[in-house]
Each structure stands twice: as C-alpha cells, then as structure tokens.
Image (cartoon, rainbow, N blue to C red; front, side, top):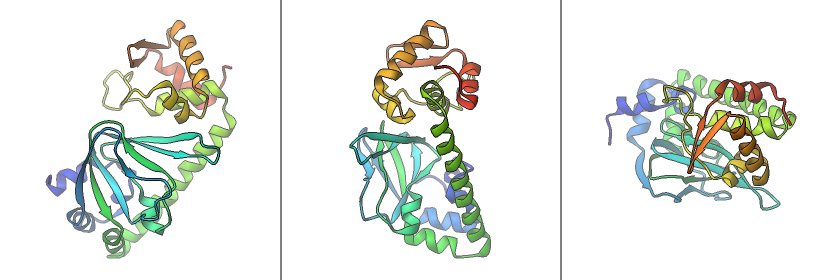
Length: 233
C-alpha cells in the first residue's frame, strides 16, 4: 500500500476523512483494505443492509446512482481519485440508499465503520471536524436540490457538464469522463431525447464540440452562466 502521507495528500479537502486529526486519520488508513475493481463492478449496492464501510477512491472513477420507485435510474454523482463515498450508511448503519459502481478500472480503500468510529471518538478535534463536515454536506445538498427544482432542462444539463469538468485540464474544457447520453440524462435529471436535442443545438452554436465519444466544452463561460443563473429553453 502507498505511504500514508501520500494517501492523505490524495484526499479531497471536503471529504469526511479530512475532518479527522492527522494521527487518527493515519490509524484509520492502516486498518483499511485495498480492493481493485473492474469496469462495471459494484462495490456498494442500493438496499444492501451491510452499510458498515465507506470507500476511499485511490484511482479511477465510480458512478453513484439509485433506482427510483418508478424504476428510473438517477445518477447522483461521479466520484474520482481523492473522493470518499458511502459515508452516511457507514455512520448510521442503515441500508444503502445508492449503488456505487466503477466506470473504469478503479482502485479503492474499504474503510470499516468500527475503525472510523474509533478514530472520530479518539479526541474532541476529530469529533468536531466530523460534525462540521456533515453540516457542510447537508448545506451543499440543500443548494443542489433547490436549484434542480428551479432550473429547466438546459440549465440542468449545463450544471451536469460543469460538474464533470476535469480540474486537472489546463484549458478547463475537458471532461473527467464521457458518459453516454442516457447516463448524462440520468445525471442531469432529464430524458435522453432532450440531452440529444440540447447537445445538437449547442454543437451547432459552437458551445460544445463532439468527436466520437469525446466531448469538449468550447464556451465554458456560457455553460457556467447558464448553470448558475438559468435561462434558455
């Protein structure tokens, strides 16, 4: 396994693990197990009663999705290296609310709930950090839900594309991955046919450019403004 300092350096700032004091975080990683996933392989299943672990993504990308009561797939997010998923069920020991599956070959650390609880309770700083991280998570979720209720199809698709932008791309135009139109619709909360219509329109207007499965954002400013303020329809 990688050096613990290197593992900690990979963690995204907003993850729940970052809330732990350094020594507790290192102890937690030492008690975790590495798992390598193939493309399409599931590590967490919606409805699973065994919610006693979280997943720290070392490399690759996973899709976090759920099936609604009507049988429609809803993609909640795509998470990549440095992210942690599955923390909520790990904390409350309730059934899983979403499925987590690899969209490409992916390596993860499986973090036991018992080890996390021991780390969080080890000192007041760790416990306070976890509480702040959870409060921040709820605040962010409220903002996403509210904006998704307010915005129509074009802003929703723009928000989805902005969320998929690769922060490592120096030009700020490349996506971290290229989901199918069906998956993009499930991520944005709109029908695949509407995704196809909007993408064709944006391509004609020079906002995006498609080549095979790859997609480049040509006019990032337009999509960011549309995502934030809404308009178009």
